[in-house]
Length: 484
Image (tube, rainbow, N blue to C red; front, side):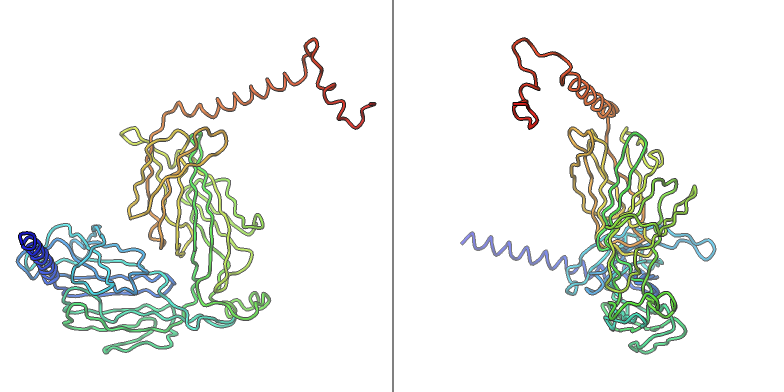
């Protein structure tokens, strides 16, 4: 009897906690009201960039310390990056301050909705307003339609979204603008008021929309930008304390646009470049660090000479050309390698640790990376490796054996999916290293040289001991030219 009463009490306590969480979540979403929301969606490339400006107000008495963003399930799967900043000041004196953005959850959320919490610099008091600017990037959100095109056809895609901003807050006024790559728009959904002029499609303004309002729209438009997608990029950064950093990058590239159908005509492609294969690409531009040296570019067959390197004290640019132009569905695999001076990227922290300061992301312009793996190979004898990356990544350790290694080199592996050009930011890898380990390779070389010298000196330069047969007599019976 006592046990049943205690179980009933526990159940009531759990129900009460769930009720409290639901009430607190509902009160937090009712605490904020969006006075004005302006969203600008850039569809000019295959990487969709959305710029969202929010003017928010605290309509409750308690201070508000965060603003929650909501994304529908169709966008959540393709969301690559979310950044936010706060506008401080007015007009010419306006400045921006970066705000922390982290994934969060709401108990009463619709199924599949993904949330991000923006932490405000200072809590909003009752009646106080703030202006936030948000950037979020979507990948693989433009779907080719038709899915296959011939060499002479333009590429058409469709984009799906909502004319209304999905938000857990009440929105007083909102407007959405879509920037198209050209004036050729096949069709679009109308949600009045709707206006299309030039290369801009406008939805709104819409007044007084309740939380989680949604109005699906589809835009069918022309987009001939190259859909360059690296399915897998493996970058190996090998550190040598003798003065060099060696970079090796393995690419698996694909054109992710409408698949090519029919026969490819190189004559037509070269004679009519503005009409034939307008959505294909044959050049790639890689931004490399300055003072790069020993650059090479090759594929499975061998070295490719059709590349150009431009380098100065600020940056280096490598323009590469695959063996053949890439149409929709076509793939190419290749390797880029180069060396860098150690003093430009390796430093010492105040606590005595050494750290590598390098760039995350893919050096190819306007490229999406489905899976990026960075392997930082530390010198033999390095201990306690750790990475400081400004966004979530998966990390683990491996061991690699190279020339003259005894115990192997520690390899710190960083992995991230859905990488876009905005992920090209500095990251650091810290580790400890004792200078005595730099003598390991010279001592190994010296010892190997001494052993080889000793073995060569004792291979037959001395006479055999009395009663001991020589090597010649031992093998003479097996020699085909023996007189016996």
